[in-house]
Image (tube, rainbow, N blue to C red; front, side, top):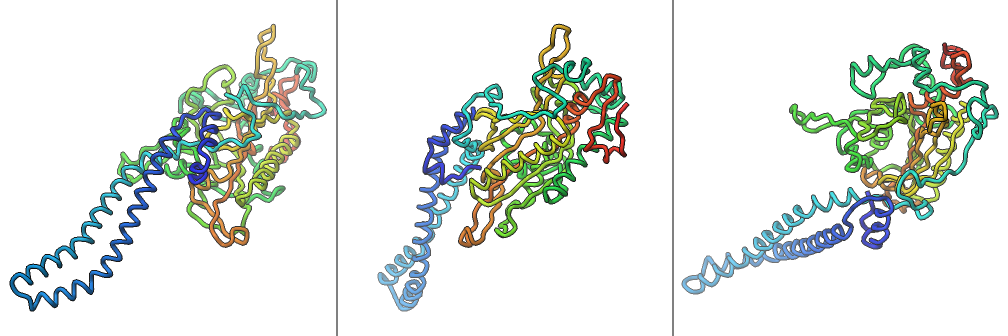
Length: 467
């Protein structure tokens, strides 16, 4: 959620930010409602102060009039009774007006709160302006010594490659038919060495973050309340991508939602808390099952294991002080961890600077990491794919957007003892089975078998080959 104070001071920045992100939101209406609400609150507080003063002064006056009334007769008694009634009615009239103002605020709040939730975080000034992922900018690439991305796969390895779909069928690594039978389209069952390789990459990535980089291992719920999805910025935008469990229709007090990333649970841990500055930064990692409806996604490049409804992911989250430079430094570090991981697996990859139109509502900046997948891309003259990059990681810098929604704050020496809203960042460490695509396709051999990357062999019982 954006800082309403900043929006009041510079509405043009937020209007431009929404436009560059392609988000339609009525900033002018928001400002109008905010001004109306604040004016109403000011009047209400003024009346409450007047009410308190009247009540304080009226007590002795009422006592005095009551004493006089006991001795009064005729016109004097009538006058005193009228004065007493008027004295008592003034606080009551103020109370009625205060209540009417409270009702006016209650009418404003739903629309105002909804508008606030729809305002995206403006992109940082150094994020390139663009309309979609087509306008993203390649920052750099990396490949192991044994693979030259400028050459076709056959020139690198001496034989024509197979796609991951062909490999998993031939090696018995995935059963799509039975998965679809049980759960519908985009479902699958990992079998045999497919399941072992899946578990190996997850365990390796998890240990990599915990043992090598000091992140705290943490389990999180994958079924959460709507407040948690809203607090982490996945609602209201993105609501159509979440699976909805309508518990309220079965007598429960609230509905639940399946999370699409462990980020939701990790960020929800400290909702509503004021942390001591000394504990920051908090570095969390989790491995969790993730669920995404993938509404609207279709096409050749989404086939197989690339775009599915259920997967497992190792996620990293950092919660730090409200300092832009510290957030930027952590962003670089978190990207560096993933580069180190991919290089240890010897998987070619590239870094993409996402443009404003591809950031999403909650990010000030986002860097995508894409692995080279020989089985993707346009077909050659023989009808075989020539290879292309496929997204495997996204590193996001969110500043205080999530933490403000979650009311997650800290205080300490740098804040003068006053609460300040935290900053947060997140990045994928490894999402499987999608990461199996580049592993299987890059490590395939001419005999149809697949070499297990050296880094994963301890997690595969020492196995060097699959098949």
